[in-house]
Length: 195
Image 1: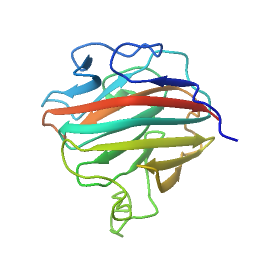
Image 2: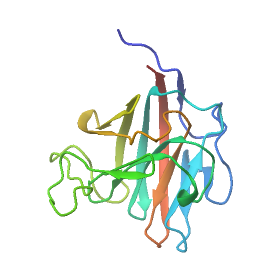
Image 3: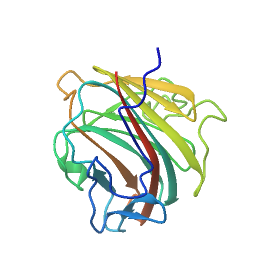
Image 4: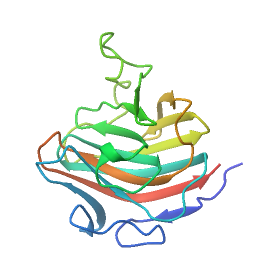
C-alpha cells in the first residue's frame, strides 16, 4: 500500500521544517542553497523540527552548481555547520556520478566499488546518476533501523548498514562539498515519509 508523504515542500521558501537561514544556508532563486566558502570542506544546513525516528524515507532534488558533491544528512544528533562536530549519517553524490556512504560518522564500504584498494569509492550502474555541474538528480534515502538504502532517479543504487554504536534517530539536512573550494548546492522538492 502506498502512503502519502508525511511532509512535502518545494523548498523555495521557509516551511514547517524550520530550515537554517544564514550565510551558508538560504532560500534563493526558487530553491534552498547550501553555500560553501573556499576555507571549508563541507557545509551542512539542517531542518530544526523534532528528530525523525529510525524508519523513514527522505527524497530531494539536488543540483550541484559549484563544487564537487552534495547530498543528504540524517540522524544528526545536533545542528552544526561544521561536519566534523556532528555525529550523523551522510550520503553524497558527486559531479562524476559517484556516491559513498558515511553512516554514523564512519565510512561504510559500498557494494559497487570498482577499486579494491578503496571500497568507499562507489560507481553506480551506467545511466543511473546524472553527472556534471548544473544537472539535477532526484536522491532518496530509505532508513530502516540500521539499514540505509540509496535510490537515485528512481533506480536502486546500493545499501549500507550503520555501525552498532550509531544513533538511529536525529535531525535531517542537506550539504554541499567543495574540498576547500567554493560550492553551491541547490535543493528542491523535499518529501518525507514515515515508514
